[in-house]
Image 1 (cartoon, rainbow, N blue to C red):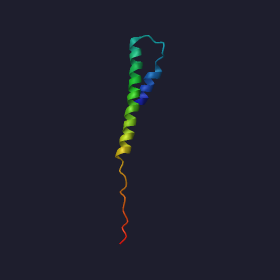
Image 2 (cartoon, rainbow, N blue to C red):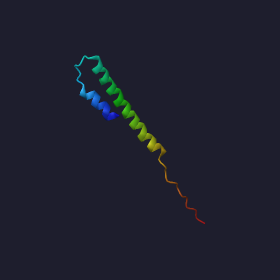
Image 3 (cartoon, helix red, strand yellow):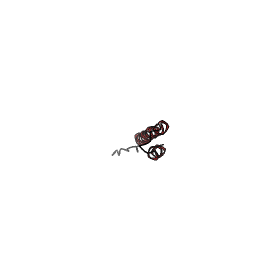
Length: 61
């Protein structure tokens, strides 16, 4: 998703005035930023839900 957004954003030059090309460039920006957000959310969810090892208490009898 992020890569597709980069391709759309950088494949269209800034000087283009065609509304369809401007729409595609803006869509590429949106898709790229959304891809970064989804990736970051995935990493955070993975880190939050990662199982922590249980601590074993040593009792002296």
